Length: 92
Image (cartoon, helix red, strand yellow):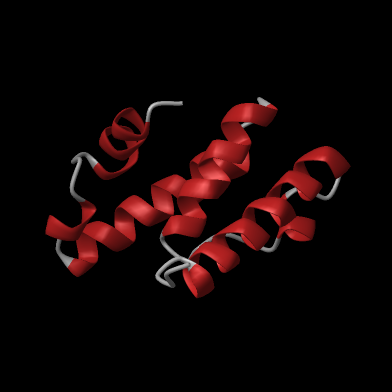
């Protein structure tokens, strides 16, 4: 999925930081609804990852209770994101 297209679709901008607090909250609610109704596994995972970017994603077990592969992918994503956040700025 195209990140810019997702941002435009849910946030109506390519720069969510430029939104007011109320506009951002409304856009985030649209994204949560979009995630909740999405049926395509790949699209659903992409929406979940975008929610994670904004610290609004449900836990993988809650997000993908009927799909063990997506749940595992989400857990792997969180693990990689944690490692990147924790160790990404360290030099070798």
